Image 1 (tube, rainbow, N blue to C red):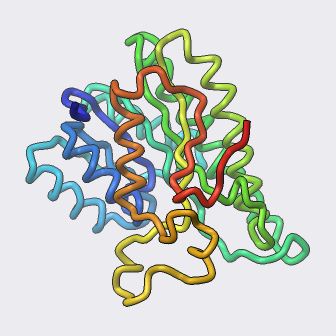
Image 2 (image 1 turned 90 degrees about the vertical axis):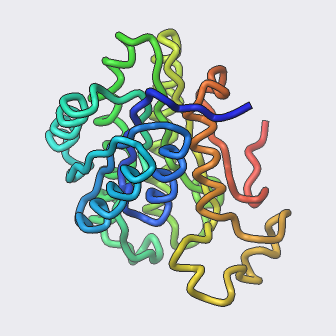
Length: 253
């Protein structure tokens, strides 16, 4: 049994980020052509494009502010013009900000999280799901977070944005399901990425003591889950919020 995405085109927002790069490489290795979205880091996007083309995949680079609908629509138009459409959408981009308490967190940070978590998802759905409906299949995969279940001090803006995103995805799963479009979320724990590997210590004792698997997950493990949900192997899974956190959070029934 293999994950085969041959003939599929995937869009990954935030593809130049720590998780986005590994997702792009992983989905390309499964046979997908890739729309590489970036906001600021054009050099990294072009480097990744060359890397994917070297293994025989088609790849295009598109700059966009994912909090603006007109940018998402322009991204869609370029993807359709150059690659013929998009079968799989991975909403990975999010605005970064400094975390602090509710009382000290600037209001603008709540707005940025709403725009980059909730509204990005809405704009992507409006832009790409109509063509999926015509095709009779499609995948929308949102990158959520274990923080949405933890609600720890300092997480309020991020948690609010991601919990709002969760609501959109669950409703959309019910609205799009009859068209054989699946809508799911992957919720990483505190994940080891390239910047962490530069340090000798990647498993923080204070964090991993509460993780049943007693370690942090890796960017590749997140990408593997995304690849599974993008494939036909996950054709009967929709509306799911899947923690990839070593058991650090466990949704209850």
